[in-house]
Amino acid sequence: MNVAQLMSRSPVTVSPDSSVPDAALLMRQRGIRRLPVLEDGRLVGIVTDRDLREVMPGRTTTLSMWEATTRLAALTVGEVMRRGVVTTHPEADTRDAAYALLRHKIGGMPVVDDAGMLVGMLTVTDLLHDYARMPEPGTDTPAVSEEARA
Image (cartoon, rainbow, N blue to C red; front, side, top):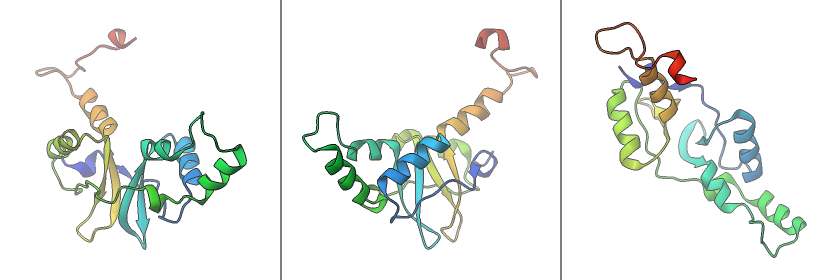
Protein backbone atom coordinates (compact mmCIF):
# COMPACT_ATOMS: atom_id res chain seq x y z
CA MET A 1 0.00 0.00 0.00
CA ASN A 2 1.29 3.49 -0.70
CA VAL A 3 1.06 6.74 1.25
CA ALA A 4 -1.43 8.31 -1.19
CA GLN A 5 -4.02 5.73 -0.15
CA LEU A 6 -3.88 6.75 3.53
CA MET A 7 -2.87 10.41 3.63
CA SER A 8 -5.21 13.27 4.36
CA ARG A 9 -5.58 15.39 1.25
CA SER A 10 -5.72 19.18 1.21
CA PRO A 11 -4.21 19.67 4.66
CA VAL A 12 -4.76 22.87 6.61
CA THR A 13 -1.70 25.12 6.22
CA VAL A 14 -0.36 28.46 7.40
CA SER A 15 2.19 30.93 6.09
CA PRO A 16 5.34 31.98 7.96
CA ASP A 17 3.73 35.40 8.47
CA SER A 18 0.75 33.96 10.38
CA SER A 19 0.67 34.92 14.04
CA VAL A 20 1.23 32.29 16.71
CA PRO A 21 -2.20 32.97 18.28
CA ASP A 22 -3.90 32.56 14.88
CA ALA A 23 -2.10 29.25 14.27
CA ALA A 24 -3.03 28.00 17.75
CA LEU A 25 -6.68 28.94 17.20
CA LEU A 26 -6.71 27.23 13.80
CA MET A 27 -5.32 24.02 15.33
CA ARG A 28 -7.87 24.11 18.12
CA GLN A 29 -10.78 24.77 15.76
CA ARG A 30 -9.77 22.01 13.35
CA GLY A 31 -8.70 19.51 16.00
CA ILE A 32 -5.23 19.05 14.52
CA ARG A 33 -1.77 18.97 16.05
CA ARG A 34 0.48 20.12 13.23
CA LEU A 35 0.40 22.68 10.43
CA PRO A 36 2.60 22.61 7.35
CA VAL A 37 4.01 26.07 6.67
CA LEU A 38 3.87 27.15 3.02
CA GLU A 39 5.50 30.08 1.29
CA ASP A 40 4.62 30.65 -2.36
CA GLY A 41 3.04 27.19 -2.39
CA ARG A 42 6.23 25.45 -1.23
CA LEU A 43 6.76 23.69 2.08
CA VAL A 44 9.19 25.71 4.21
CA GLY A 45 8.49 24.29 7.65
CA ILE A 46 6.06 22.75 10.08
CA VAL A 47 4.66 23.98 13.37
CA THR A 48 3.18 21.68 15.98
CA ASP A 49 0.96 22.23 18.98
CA ARG A 50 4.01 21.53 21.13
CA ASP A 51 6.02 24.27 19.36
CA LEU A 52 3.21 26.72 20.10
CA ARG A 53 2.80 25.64 23.74
CA GLU A 54 6.52 26.22 24.31
CA VAL A 55 6.26 29.89 23.31
CA MET A 56 3.02 30.62 25.16
CA PRO A 57 3.44 32.56 28.41
CA GLY A 58 3.28 30.37 31.49
CA ARG A 59 0.81 30.79 34.32
CA THR A 60 3.52 32.13 36.60
CA THR A 61 4.82 34.80 34.22
CA THR A 62 5.77 38.19 35.64
CA LEU A 63 4.34 39.89 32.56
CA SER A 64 0.99 41.59 32.79
CA MET A 65 -1.82 40.09 30.73
CA TRP A 66 -1.54 43.00 28.31
CA GLU A 67 2.24 42.57 27.91
CA ALA A 68 1.95 38.81 27.39
CA THR A 69 -0.83 39.21 24.82
CA THR A 70 1.04 41.95 22.95
CA ARG A 71 4.29 39.96 22.79
CA LEU A 72 2.51 36.79 21.74
CA ALA A 73 0.56 38.57 18.98
CA ALA A 74 3.84 39.85 17.55
CA LEU A 75 5.33 36.34 17.29
CA THR A 76 4.99 34.70 13.87
CA VAL A 77 4.88 31.07 12.85
CA GLY A 78 8.09 31.66 10.88
CA GLU A 79 9.89 32.41 14.15
CA VAL A 80 8.83 29.18 15.89
CA MET A 81 8.42 26.64 13.07
CA ARG A 82 10.75 23.73 12.46
CA ARG A 83 12.59 24.06 9.18
CA GLY A 84 14.12 20.60 8.84
CA VAL A 85 10.89 18.84 7.91
CA VAL A 86 10.74 15.07 7.51
CA THR A 87 8.57 14.40 4.46
CA THR A 88 7.38 11.48 2.40
CA HIS A 89 6.19 10.96 -1.16
CA PRO A 90 2.68 9.88 -2.23
CA GLU A 91 4.06 6.73 -3.87
CA ALA A 92 6.17 5.73 -0.85
CA ASP A 93 5.30 2.45 0.84
CA THR A 94 3.30 3.00 4.04
CA ARG A 95 5.65 0.71 6.00
CA ASP A 96 8.60 2.91 5.05
CA ALA A 97 6.64 6.00 6.07
CA ALA A 98 5.68 4.39 9.39
CA TYR A 99 9.34 3.55 10.00
CA ALA A 100 10.30 7.20 9.33
CA LEU A 101 7.70 8.38 11.86
CA LEU A 102 9.09 5.99 14.47
CA ARG A 103 12.73 6.75 13.73
CA HIS A 104 12.23 10.50 13.96
CA LYS A 105 9.78 10.23 16.88
CA ILE A 106 7.16 12.35 15.16
CA GLY A 107 3.40 11.97 14.87
CA GLY A 108 2.96 13.07 11.28
CA MET A 109 4.68 14.34 8.19
CA PRO A 110 3.85 16.28 5.05
CA VAL A 111 3.50 14.41 1.78
CA VAL A 112 5.18 16.22 -1.12
CA ASP A 113 5.21 15.42 -4.82
CA ASP A 114 8.21 15.42 -7.19
CA ALA A 115 7.90 19.19 -7.64
CA GLY A 116 8.07 19.73 -3.88
CA MET A 117 4.42 20.72 -3.64
CA LEU A 118 2.41 19.69 -0.58
CA VAL A 119 -0.23 17.12 -1.54
CA GLY A 120 -1.22 15.74 1.86
CA MET A 121 -0.35 14.83 5.43
CA LEU A 122 0.30 11.38 6.83
CA THR A 123 -0.12 10.84 10.56
CA VAL A 124 0.17 7.97 12.99
CA THR A 125 -3.62 8.16 13.25
CA ASP A 126 -3.95 7.54 9.49
CA LEU A 127 -1.77 4.45 9.83
CA LEU A 128 -3.70 3.21 12.86
CA HIS A 129 -7.03 3.64 11.08
CA ASP A 130 -5.77 1.42 8.30
CA TYR A 131 -4.24 -1.12 10.67
CA ALA A 132 -7.47 -1.30 12.69
CA ARG A 133 -9.39 -2.19 9.52
CA MET A 134 -7.07 -5.10 8.76
CA PRO A 135 -8.84 -8.48 9.12
CA GLU A 136 -7.35 -11.34 11.07
CA PRO A 137 -5.26 -13.64 8.88
CA GLY A 138 -7.53 -16.14 7.12
CA THR A 139 -10.79 -14.33 8.01
CA ASP A 140 -12.89 -11.42 6.84
CA THR A 141 -13.44 -10.00 10.33
CA PRO A 142 -11.48 -7.40 12.28
CA ALA A 143 -9.01 -8.70 14.88
CA VAL A 144 -10.96 -7.02 17.72
CA SER A 145 -14.71 -7.47 17.96
CA GLU A 146 -17.01 -4.52 18.48
CA GLU A 147 -17.95 -5.86 21.91
CA ALA A 148 -14.31 -5.92 22.98
CA ARG A 149 -13.88 -2.24 22.02
CA ALA A 150 -16.72 -1.08 24.26
